[in-house]
Length: 267
Image (spheres, rainbow, N blue to C red):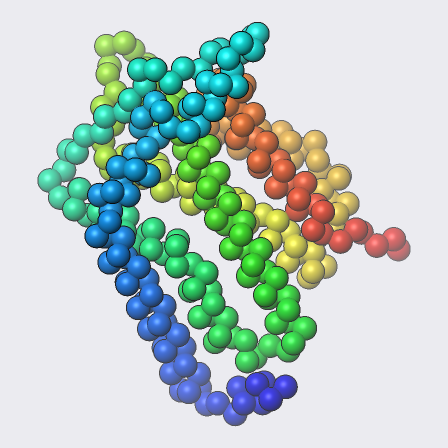
């Protein structure tokens, strides 16, 4: 209660000055992280970002092991797959070096950024509200990074493998630019990170009384169709095995969201 009274006594300019201090600390953390990543970016590119371009990537080896000897499922092979990237603009490699350092720094320092923002808004909250925000903070960070991991280890490699080998005509070879590769890489990974926030959003809507568990049961069949379409859009492949690999984690998120929401109260 003392924190609320102290906050109320602060003037508008004092609030603004406190916010500026928080933003400065956030900028310092992100810039410092970006500088460190900039130094190690060549190794990060070789060992992490470009790893799905090689046939020995962990997901490809797993697919080859799982599909081995299963009737009706095409044998997945790790042999002969390699994606060579080209650079078609003079300054692309330099700007991608800088931009990738920044985006990765923002992702890795995301919990620290949220913590600094929390220190700014916490004095205005009551203890009960603080407990709810702490839960949302932990759950949100956990699910975001889990989504990023699924995007990196599953969704992007499957998409890359399909699109890199797809030809509308044998007379048109694929020459993938570095810019195109990085745009797809960052987009799919961040999209999966956002999708994995679905349980958190559902929980918050449930706490607000907007969403109830009955909604998920009532529209489960519709959701399955919609999620299958979403999985097909994320991974445009006709292979039911890879489509299922992408669909399953998204559907698990749907069921997890239902569990986190309160049951609908009887009238």
